[in-house]
Image (cartoon, rainbow, N blue to C red; front, top):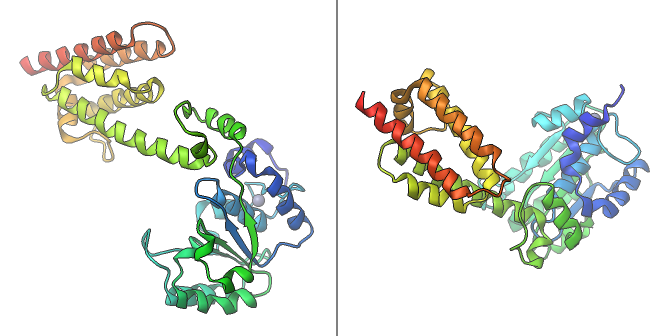
Length: 336
Ligand SMILES: [Zn+2]
């Protein structure tokens, strides 16, 4: 099968992080020499990409068209099933709920699954995450499987807290310590994801995935706030100048992405009952009162504002005019 490198890039490139490359070269060597240990323990500080490195390893182990750099093709049946979460040869041992412990009966079921015959000749893969969530008795019941894994089986354990693992578990696994990112690598990589890092202290930058996580959490909170503001404006319970003021303080790009989506959501809501609309009842009712003509006109204004996202114009004034316009249309629609 010919491997389209672009398709591979789209599918698997997220797993490859630039500060992992030296370590990955060792893994690629082990893969090529068929020397991958049967128990693999991925450790290192939080936010450096241990799970991506481990998932990249799983991808390589299960791919039927792996290249000489140890990279999965992203397209074979093994790769497609793994990405869809339906690969029959992967067993994942994780807590029932985040933060809970992994119990002994879960380990027994996991060990049993690993002993079943694999569907593909690449063998079975077990994934334990986080390994420090194993209770002592769960860890003890895992020892035998780690010591004598079924033929062709690989078990990957992931932990942020190596010292909380039983020494007997640690000694039965090959350790892969995932390095923190260099500041240069972290800055470059975060920049490609439009994550602003000027205010981020150096020690946090070295864990770039944690920086992304914090950014996304912050963004989710902001979006909730923007949605509430929009809803209140549409219900004529918010002052458009105050709404604009708050919006203007946000980073421009994510805000513009949001307002673009919401102007489209409002248009959809006024012409059709959409089951998974992100709009609340107030906003949906307002959209119906406004109607498509008014909403299309407002969408064009949103488009004009979006074009000025990089411009040096008075951003706050532009947003004021955008929200005053919407507010006037709402008042107008309320009159008729
Ligand atoms: Zn593949």
